[in-house]
Structures are given as structure tokens and as C-alpha cells.
Image 1 (cartoon, one colour):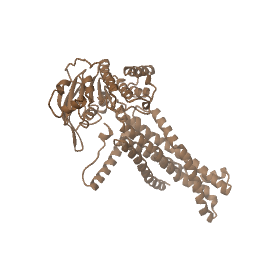
Image 2: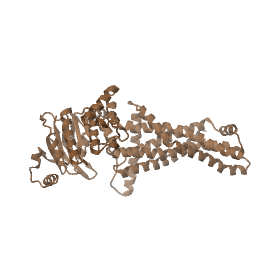
Image 3: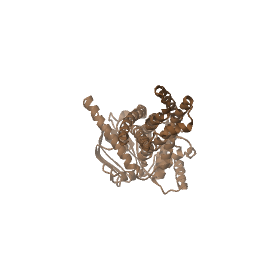
Image 4: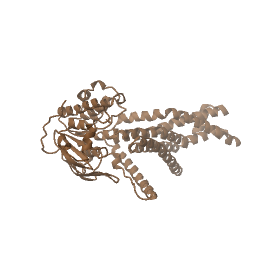
Length: 267
Length: 257
């Protein structure tokens, strides 16, 4: 059945009741969407080629922006942290401070926000446009399982690619931090890296990896859900792209808070 | 080419609809429709815009669910059907969309290959190529095989859309406004193509249109959708030989009197 026919909406009643009912229904519809993903993703046919293509697209779309942003984040964070540490004569702690901030929080968060903006909106607009021009319906009536081909592949791609991009962001941001430290304190690359990784534990790497996986899954699900269920018309495509970005960013921040809390308990 | 002269044997209906109702919010579009499609016939569904013609074929293809009524396609009730059964039925039905719905990120070749390789996995590369070329040849657009949909005209897009459905050798064709937005000459070419498809592939078709030239050229039988029901059915002449004020303006406008 098409998305327009399978999702539930409420159109009558007082505005608050309507809002409340539609909120619960939206949550239910998202739950159904995610359940359908898990139901379809493990069974053949597997769209390996399309997954690889989507992984490549996600990586390429975000690569330049992530490189620039990651580098700037590393430089700015180091630069802004220096005066506070200098007050206590503790500028030698800069590498540790920078690496903790980047590896524990900034790398995965910055990557997720950029991916939400670049990839999430792109997925929302692409699928929304396909829905509006009946391309998804055309796939359905020809028995080609568009959910698997369009949705599962994109969610897998964002989930796989985000941890890789976050690792790359961390590397670039640390490089930015190092250049700033080298310029200010004349620290060598080896010393910087030794100091940077000294306070980092195994659980920090896991936390970043798990966070990035969850962020990637969220961005994929939100982008695909908004696009796949977009209403008819060009306005619907714009709304889908916009909602994909806003919702994904909002969820990324909430997930960040929850995951940080969970890993704090584990430490 | 003249209208297909296929003799329609009124045996068991391929598609049988009884008491079909469909509403969107408060708008009751279909109000208890009864319709049968017999093997080998071209059935034209005529009606004004917004009367639910497209909704009807979307229900037949399983894209929409009916609110009430029975829809049997190849003997299977579409209201209580498993996902696998629906897939099987869909492969036997070709759906030509109003705006062609070509996959705009794929070339014409990939557009045609897409449903074929996913539904017939055992085909060799050579068999896939042959099937694509045969389908394109059937619509007279073999030369467009490596073009992108954005490079094609409206008429060409319609033809490629039809070729994409033909590649699975459907038994039933559903045409949604096949001549909408086309100039009169291209429209006539598409009408001829519909008749050629019926003869060559031995399909039965439901053609949704408000173009009476299309209806006259392609239809063995006309069903006129008025106020959510089929009020008039029969040959072109039988349907329009009436003083019904809801039908007369339709004819007068199409053949400007």
C-alpha cells in the first residue's frame, strides 16, 4: 500500500486535541516505519550495490564540509581554551583537553549536525520528489519493493557512514588543535599526540562509535520517513526536506544528552 | 491505425468490482461502483476531473485500499490479500502513469531493466538486453535507450512509461490519462500505440481519460463515471446517445459543436 494510504491522520476535533492526537499518531507512524525497516532489512533481496552507492553519496556529500568544519572546530576550541588554562599555567594540558572534548563530544556531534543538514535534507527532498512524481508508486506497482530499495539502503548507508565520518572529523579537528598548539607552544606532533591520547579510554572510543551509529540511524530514518511520506505537491517536497533537517538535529541533541548520561554511569 | 477490433468474449471477468466505495475525509469519491473487465477488451473509463477515475485504478493495482466493496483481480480479493499475493498480481498488471513516472536518475535502459531484473532474477545479461530492446522497439523508441528521461519529450516519456510496463509482459494494462498534456497528433500516436499493445501483447486494458478522441479510438466499451457511480456503460454511441445534461456537455466540449 502507498504511504499516503497506510499512515494515519486526524483531521477533526479541537486544535489541542487534534495536536495531541496527531503527535501520538506521528510517533506510532514512525514506530511502524522503523519496525518495517527491521522487518525488511534482514531478508533478501539485498541491495548491496545501492547501499555502496548511498554510502559513497553520503560520504562525498559531507566530506568537504566536514573537513573544513572539523578543522575550524579544532583550531577555535584550542584557541578559546588557551587563556583559561594559561591563567593556571596549565597550557601543557591543552592537548588532553582538546582530545577529550573532540573525541568524547564534538566529533560525533559536529558530524551528525552536518550530516543532518546535508544528507538528511537531501534524502528528504529526493524521496519527497519521487513520491510527488509517483516514481515510488511506479516502483510499487511493478513489484519492486521501493521501501527496501529506497529506504533500507539509505538508512544502512547513513548508519555505516556516520561513524567513519566522525572518526575523520576527530582526526581533522585534532590536526587543527595540533597546528594551533604547535604555533602557540611549539609542541611537536608526537608530544601532542601522546598527551592527547593519554586521558582517552577505550570506553571513550566506544561511546563515540555508538553515538555516531545512533545519530546515523536517526538521520537516515528521519530523512527517509519525511520524504517517503511527503504529501503531494512541490510544497510537500520542501516541507519534507525542512522537517528532515529540523527533526534530525533536534533528536541528535536529545540522543547526545541521553547517551552521555548512560556512558557516564558506565565509566 | 483503427480502433482494435478484438472480439470480446464475455467469459470470466479478469477484474470484477462490486459495490466499491472510497472516501477521502468527507469527500466521498466512489459511491458503490460495479465494474467488470473481460479478457481482450479495452475498457475506457470516462469522467470529469476529480470524479475518482484514477482512484479506481489505484485501488485495482493495490496502491489504495477501498473503504467498502469487493475488488477481485485474477480471482483474488484485493481487500484480503497477502503481500506476496499482491506482488504476484502486480507483476501481471502494467500501470502507465499520467506523468509517466519515469525514474529520473536512471537512463531509459535502466528504467526498463529496473523492474525486470528484480522480478526475473534468473535472466542472463543478454536476455535482459533483448527484453529491453524488444519493449523499446514495441513503442518505437529504441534510439532513446541511453537517454535520460529529462531529455525526452512528453510523448516520448509516455511511450517509455508504457515500454517499462510491457517489459514484464502484463496481462492487464491500466492507463491513467494516456493523452493528458499531449498535442493532438502525439495523442493520436499514443492512442494507436494502446491499440497496438492490445493486439501485440493480447492485453486487456482499462483506460482512464476525459479525452473523447482517445475513448473513441481505443475503447471497445465505455463506462461513464458520474457522481461516484457508473451511470452509463456501452459502446461510444450508446453512452453519448442521451439527453442527460451531465453527459451532453462532455460530448459537446470535446467535439466543439
